[in-house]
Amino acid sequence: MADMDSLSRLYDQARAEGGQLVVYAGGDAPEQAAMYTGGFTDRFPDIRIEVSVDLSKYHDGRIDAAHLRGDNRVDVVHLQTLHDFPYWKKQGMLLPFKPEGFEQLPDAFKDPDGAYYPLFVFAFSNVVDTKVIPADKAPREAADYLRPDLKGRIVLVYPHDDDAVLYQFEQIIAKHGIDWLERLQDQDVQWVRGSATPLQFIAAGKAAATFTSFYYLNPPASETMRMILPREDYFQSWYQVGGILASAPHPAAAKLYMSFRLSLQAQQSSAQWPARKDVSIPNWKSIWEYPNTNPAGFRDFMSDRARVERFRGIMEDIIGPVVGENPTGVERLWR
Image (cartoon, rainbow, N blue to C red; front, side):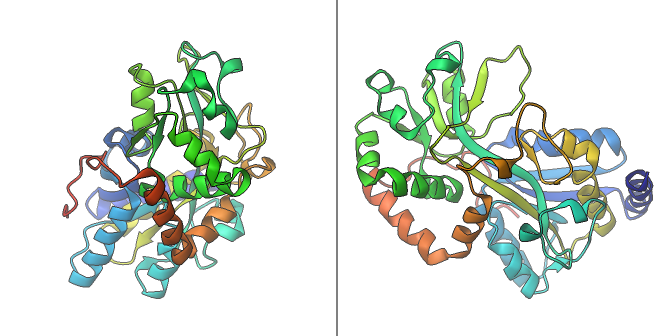
């Protein structure tokens, strides 16, 4: 009941301030905006929400530039670039706010003052179309991608274009050695930009498997695409963190949005794992119960920019430079 009362009050305040909301969401396909607008718009139809989806590394540059110019028009940000949020707090760029459910978020990923906190858990792992490769024959472990039958049928995100994929490769190579990557290169991998792109390739029959994409944990039974976790090798997971900008033009709408995102209704509808500790997803364990993933490790990786840049250089040396347009189609200088 507290959730409902709080949301109703914030909805009234958001309508009174103009009924608008602008969100920067880290992602790599324009259609991902529907994950954030759908349930919110259904619940709060009087709020006109604009969600700009782009690579987190591009959004953080826009946020910093707008701060320097003093012309911010954005209310809420939720991004993969976890290292930005402590910096933005120190700069006074975030508005402290503790939504309902804040106490159910893991302490290691939230600011104690409510300047930022996790909203979702995302994961990249094996994805196949089970019409093409049955689940029992799908590649699960890193070595499976060296199978002769998969040569020319693998699509992967450039690790040096996405820090989550970069950390995933770092962990796999730490176990299997750089020789694994060099042998993977001999598999005629199709390297692409954006974690949604491999799914498009698989759906179109241009590839058969990837391990660098997000997919729904419990898709409709009619869909044949499936995410399959490895039993032993590392799969990438992290908490997508968000916050309200201190200069938000619509602070009440921003608080409404963050409160909704952490409500039981929204968390129980998560595409993957929820951020709240008191919510579970049918048929799947808590992300912390999988020994072969480490959200805290990714947080620490993102905070060590020298480590990130060093490994990025190694990947570019072996794989080659990133080629292709921004998968979101958003102009780099968009304001």
